[in-house]
Image (cartoon, rainbow, N blue to C red; front, side):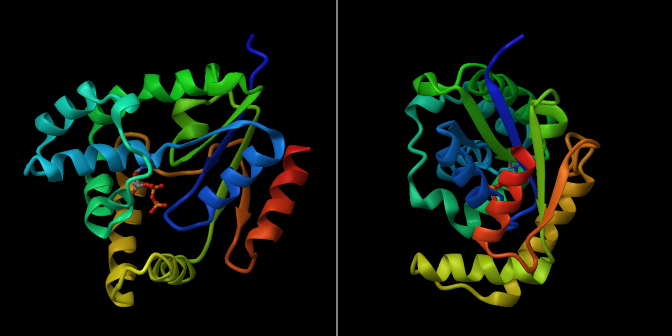
Length: 213
Ligand code: CDP
């Protein structure tokens, strides 16, 4: 059995899972992987190649050929609305998901930098990628609160957005994430749920650390 501690943080869009996962990793000196970036990177590659993200065969070919080492995960375009939409579409593709399983499991089993643990955030970490994770946290929040947070996040990055459209996009993506046949978004049976509707980042972090400790 591996001695690496694995922490799975799952939840819907803008629930606060990324902020929380990053803070847990920093606190414990663990490596952190934002798995949404993998789906975003594939969505972006398809858009840049002029391909339709809904074209299942082409998306799958991109996922199979995907090389994390040559991907710039700091590219702000990865967070654009168009990329976000494309990511949601490719993430419902079972062949794309299959192609990305190994890279995620490898990160959890052998975290970069020799870290003693790994924190992965996504939708299916506790259910599919790392069902044996030591700790599983599912972060959720009311959809209007999540849409407001996303609008603010975009604003902070200097990106104009139409709040009603952000809310609509989020509803559609939520629906797709929750109802897709492969790895639908849902808390693992043994996950602790943190509802951040009325919790700020500090309070959510305190709750998560008390669960972990
Ligand atoms: O924070 P936000 O939900 O906007 O984005 P993200 O976590 O970067 O995820 C982008 C898209 O990738 C989501 O809509 C999900 O459909 C998908 N995703 C997934 O299916 N499984 C994961 N482990 C992570 C992301």
